Amino acid sequence: MKSRNGMRIISVFMTLLLVSAMAMPAMACTPYAQPAQDGGAATSIGCPCSEGIDIVDDSDVKVETTELSGMEKNKAIAQALSDKSVLKLRKELIKSGYKPSIEKISATKAATINESGTITTTLVAMPFSGADGNVTAVITFASNELGSAAVAVVISDGMLTTLGYDSISGEVQILSIDYCSFCMWAVGGICAVIAHKGCGAGCLYVCTKVPNPLWAAICYGTCWLICDYIVAYDKCGSGAAIICEEVGLC
Image 1 (cartoon, one colour):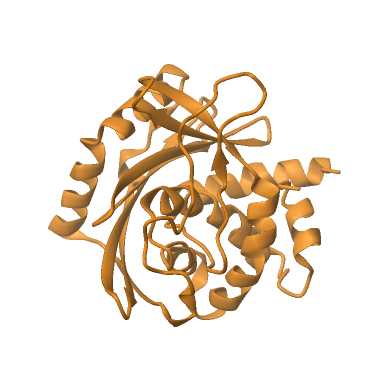
Image 2 (cartoon, one colour; image 1 turned 135 degrees about the vertical axis):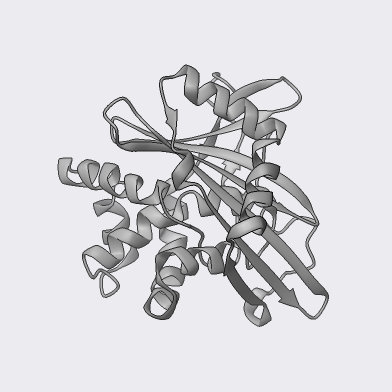
């Protein structure tokens, strides 16, 4: 059962999520974005994070991360802002009353290396603020040799929602995300890397071990929430079930 404290915590740490670089762990991956089953806005967007990628066992995968700056950062941001999915998600957020925080946009790059070669993923996080001035949404754009993807993670009334643009219907739709399973899966990987990488670089490292762009975008836009809670309350000694309930995702 979600406590009021948990709901408050999810709001606080979503704010931190949206102004920082993000990402997450690597183990066996499962689809987290699936068609909605409630008869509402179903989506054609799925997220089999290793589909079409020559990485089955990621234990030998190496990830090198870099925070972009200068011309390289500007180029990455320009690419993100010209993407059709980003434009549609941005329009939807602005229509809903969110304001883009241009000065807080971050851009990072991760090289995923295994025996088959290297895939270089660029991740751009574009935060938005709500009417009260707090950051309440973020659009994450991920691109690499395999393609590109963009999602918007929104916090409203203590609840997390992920939006995606469906090019088939031409509409922005809600992605059905199993946040509880995601959190339960994530905690071990986060605790394994935060001591020497921190939440930003640590999440980037974890999310791009399997560099499916959609997976990276969803993962990168959610991981910081969990990670920052773990750090703030020194929770790595607690079990995943306890952490995920306290953070408000289970």
